[in-house]
Length: 312
Image (cartoon, rainbow, N blue to C red; front, side, top):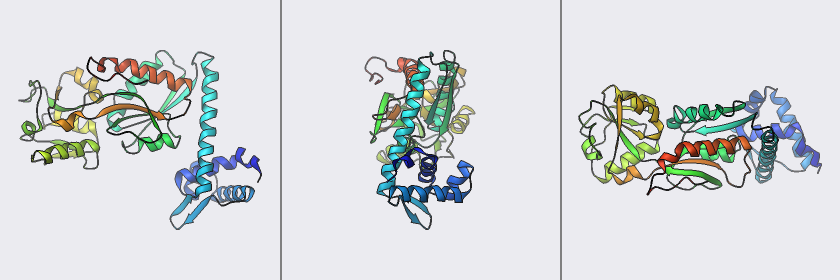
C-alpha cells in the first residue's frame, strides 16, 4: 500500500463521491470530467489494494474500507480547519469561516440576527447557512459539512454534542385582535374551534400537534398547510386563523405588535428544546466556539429560574 495516496487530490474526489453517491454528480460539483473522478477512484483502490465502493445500478456506496477512509478524510479536514482557526485566533479572530445548518424556523430570523450581532465585534468572520429538516441536521454535522447545527430536539443523537439547550415550548400564534389573543394561556381544545394553519404532515411540530389532538380526541383539520413557518405566521397575522411555533423563531416579529404568542397547557406542546449541536469529540475552530458563546449570551433570558441553564 502507498500511504501517499491519502494525502493527494484523489482523496477530495473520493470524499465527493461518498457524499453524492455518484461519480457524475461528484464530477459536476468538482467541475471536472467524470472520467477524471473515475481514474482517481481506481488509482486509490489500486494503491490501497482494496475496493472502496460497492458499485450499484443507482450509484456507488462505500464499503467497510470506504467508510474507514471517509472517516479519516473527515478528521483530516476538521483538523486543518481547527488549526487554521487557532492560527487566526492568534490574530484576534480577524478571519475565519463558520458553517451553520439550521431548521427553517430559526433560519429566517434567529440565526441571521445572531450572525449580524456577532459580526459587529468580529467583522472578518464569514458565515454560510444551509437550511434543512430537523432530521437531517445531525447527519450534516457527522458528515463534516457543517460546524454547528441550530435545531429543535426531543431525543439525544449519536455522536452529537449539545453545546446548549433551552426549553422551546410551542406557542399559539394569533393576530393581535383575535378573540383569544388576550388569554394568559390556551389549550388545543379551545383553538380547534378556529381555522388552523399547520406545518406539513412530515414535520415534527405537526406530529406533536396531531399526537396531542388524537390523545384528546380533538378535530385537527387545517385550512392552510405549508412547509414555511413564515407563511403560517403570516396567515395568522392577517387574521386567517391560528398558527403554531416556538417564540424564539419569531422574536422580532412579536416586537411589531401585530401578533401574539400564547402559551399552551397541553403536555406535548411543552416537551421540545432548542439546541445548538456540534460533533462529539471534535475540537472546533475558534471562530465557531466564539459564535456559540455569543448565541449563549443571546439565550440567557430564556434560562429563567426553574428552567435548565444552557449547557456549555
